[in-house]
Length: 161
Image 1: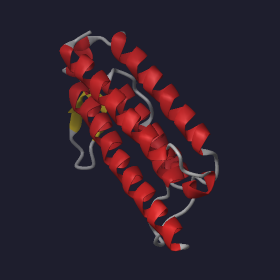
Image 2: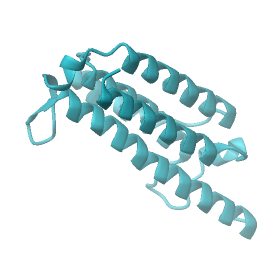
Image 3: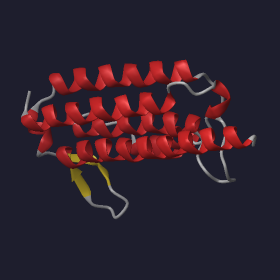
Image 4: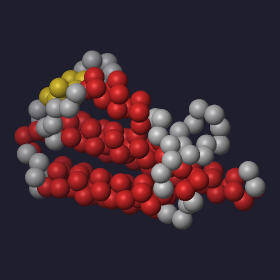
């Protein structure tokens, strides 16, 4: 495995482990709860993280999914996620981890230097390496959000809200 792919696999394992820890022990009711209007629930954070991480990693590893379709349907749908179970979220995270590690193990190192068909919001083409790094950074960002939501849920539960 290329050192960049190996490093990505290490951080993905860490991040998904941290995400699972943030969910472990929470009741299913916590998934749709938000402390304030306009915040993303744990269900949304999980669904969006799964989708976006898979898409960005795929792009970084040479896949060419439709960016327009992602932005028009998949991404907005993720932000409407509701319901589910904590066990189901953990299963989905575990499945994503296995899928990403398998993708990294068979990845062609040449994709790291190639420009992707996806562009950033400024219209700049990205290399595979940059798309892969964005996948990992974005996942870790939402791990932090899930950890904060867990803490807020637990605090509100103790206070009877």
